[in-house]
Length: 223
Image (cartoon, rainbow, N blue to C red; front, side, top):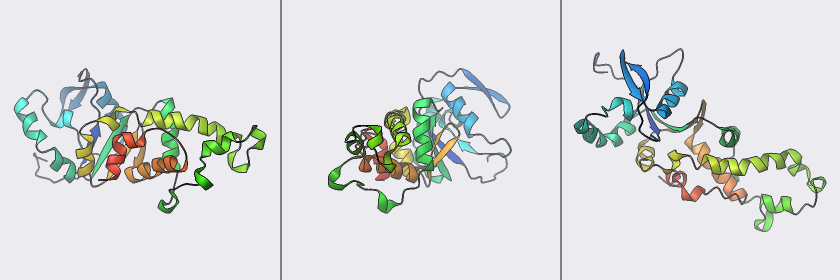
């Protein structure tokens, strides 16, 4: 910290700017400062009520009206994210389609050696279910509750991985630099390794087509 010379542990925030419309006022060092609505949503969810939290956020820590400073800081971005204690990938406020699958990904605990085909002869979860003529023919593993969950999970995962963060150009650099990468949707937080492993589980154990290979998540997992 410049005022005291104290070295503090900070977290860097990786997020999608959206439209750069700086309309929401906040107080920064007792000075009114305008940020985007999306960033304001992130700050509300990232802040701690009873403890200080040091965050590095480009739109606040870099003077957006100083072109020379912006150009200089762009060259420091890799170092800034590398020195951060962790990188928080802010996905945005939750909505109904992807809140449910994110909760599932948070609560699943799949061992690495179980990520692979689960049905013989390449049969998928959906193929198994479709082979039953009625719900009564579905065995204990695939009862009515399972089917109801399944119908929500696939479109929800598609919606989740369609969020803007997964398609940002800067994601690769920020993720590569991170000592520890965390994903946050609203107030729910998930380790990147668990998100990748559990999402991959659904693709390899089923025929879900939420295009994991087409977004940056697979790239992150290979860094």
